[in-house]
Structures are given as C-alpha cells and as structure tokens.
Image (tube, rainbow, N blue to C red; front, side, top):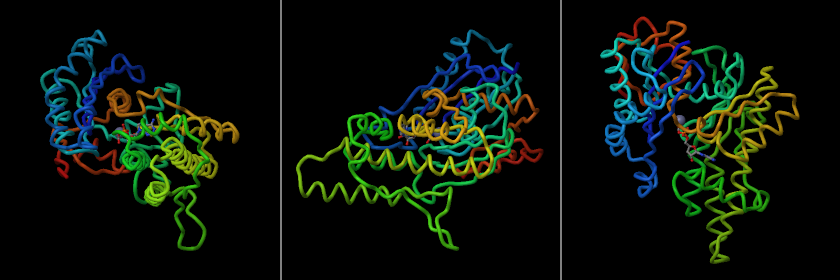
Length: 356
Ligand code: KG4
Ligand code: ZN
C-alpha cells in the first residue's frame, strides 16, 4: 500500500506526516500560535521564517516516529495552494528537493482537499459520493465529493468564513487567538439562548432565501453592537453567554444548510473538515440532526480537523495510487478553487503556476 511523506506549511503550522494510504504512521505538528499570538493573527513573513526553522527537524521526527526510512517511502507530497505564498514555498521546496534527492514521485496537494480527506481517517472504507461541510479559517463550503479530485461547491459563505467569524468575535470579547477554541471553551459555561442573534440568511433574486449559502459578517456586526450596548449598561460583560449564543447561532446556521443540502442531493453521508469542525457544539448538533434524518455523519478526530500533514498525505496517497503526479515545476498559489484540483496533475503542469 502507498506510503507517503507529506508536508503542510500553508499557514501557521509546520506539519509533516507519514501515512500508509489512510493509516497515519506519524504526524508531527509544530504550531506557531504562541509566536503570532501577540499580533492577534498570523504575520505572513514571520510564518515563512518560522517554517524554515522547523521544517527539517519535523521531517526527521516524522520519519523516526513512523520508524521508516527513505527506501520505504513511495512518494513525497506538499500543500501547494491555497495559502500564504511564502509559507507554502517552504514546504513545497522541501518536498520537491526530497523527491529529487531520493528519486520519488512528487504530488502537489490542494489544502482543502486535505481537509476533505480527514473523513477517511474517520472511516477508511468511505466511498464517494458524499457531502463535506468544510469549515476553516478561510473557507466555509458545502462540497459534493464526487471522486478523488472531482468536487462541486454547492454552498458557501458570501463574506467571512466560519473560523474567521469565531476569531473576530473572540477578539471583540477580549478572548485570545485563535478564537475558535477559546469561544468553544468559554461557551460551555454560558446560556446559548441568552441572546438572539441573526443567522445570516442570503436573499435570492427571485425571492426567498438561498438554501445553502450563508453570511457571517452580519452576525459579527450584531455581536459588536450588542457588546457596545451591554458595556453601556454594565461594567461586566456576560462573556460566557455571548460566546454560547454566538456559537449556537453559527452551529445552527451551518447544520440547517448542511442537512438541507444532503437531503436535496440525496447524499447519505456527511463529512466535516477544517478547524471549525473541532467545535463541540457543531459536532453535537450535526450528529443529532443527521440521526434524526437518517443521515450518517463522519466526525474526524479533532487533531485532524485543524491543519496537519496527515490529511494532506491521505489525499496525496490516493492521487499517487491513481498515477496523478505533479511536475517538479509546480509553483504555489495563494488562491485556487477546488474545481481546479486536477490542474495540479495535468500534462501541462510543466508550466509553473502563477505565484499569486
Ligand atoms: O483548518 P484550520 O486549522 O486552518 C485553516 O485552514 O484556516 O482552521 C483554523 C480555524 C481558526 O479560525 C480557529 O479559530 C478555528 O479554526 N477553530 C475552531 C475550533 N478550533 C479551531 N473554531 C471553533 N471551535 C473550535 N473548537
Ligand atoms: Zn486549513
């Protein structure tokens, strides 16, 4: 079975993993969160330099933890898009260099495809088609997974991504970065029905609301106004109630759209991926509603929801086993839609991709 060494450096985690198809042999994640925390977000230049510091050690650690050496590795993979260009370049260059030195096939991977492949770590027997609710710091999408590399986006947010909304609202509430885990923790002590917040419906041109698309920027503004009003009437903000009400609104909005989409498209399995898929309320509510509608939910282990290289390795192993290889001229891209994934393995991938 295909054994892949995978590298992920698209944002603020330097991650290296060794996977045997969908079995994780090792997964090293070196987080930069503490370094970026004083700035309240990721500083791209700092991230690139930090990846450079950590990448070689992480590669050695991943091989050691898997108790394997280069002769046993079948291919080398790295995330090449989307993400921070300087950060992506560190992982991609390391992977290409290793592929050349050890004469292994090289596979470029789309970051979001990695998040989708977390589903296979929840159930290695999973077969498409299925629906994936992909909720990360930069994306909120409902994706129809038709086959490896073949994706259709059925719904998305029109503005802020779910993770972005968690991070912004956490900042408003004076909580730390990243905001998602902080809100999740504090909401446990709050009343989710303390405040009624707008769900972020999108009006359709012909009337009614879009069944799968959502908006989170109005919700963020509503929390901002509410915080302003509450501050005028009291010195102490009910942080736990605010966090719980916000979290409940996001979870309900996402679950409602996901269930509607799965039912409309006749997709019986729903997978979740991306950092926000680690949210306790979202996981619980989705499981509850799906069971109610006779749908199956795949909840990957939390550590494979947030950025890591194991899920990148799973996607790469599948491409590798299908003969989808990338050219060593492959470049990085800050933006790239999932519908273009197969471009990474196209015959003309000799052409470098745009660097922006
Ligand atoms: O997938 P990810 O690790 O990186 C991106 O590709 O963006 O997602 C990071 C996002 C951050 O916005 C973070 O606040 C959010 O995921 N997140 C959470 C939780 N854990 C991470 N949001 C809500 N609840 C959580 N438990
Ligand atoms: Zn991610």
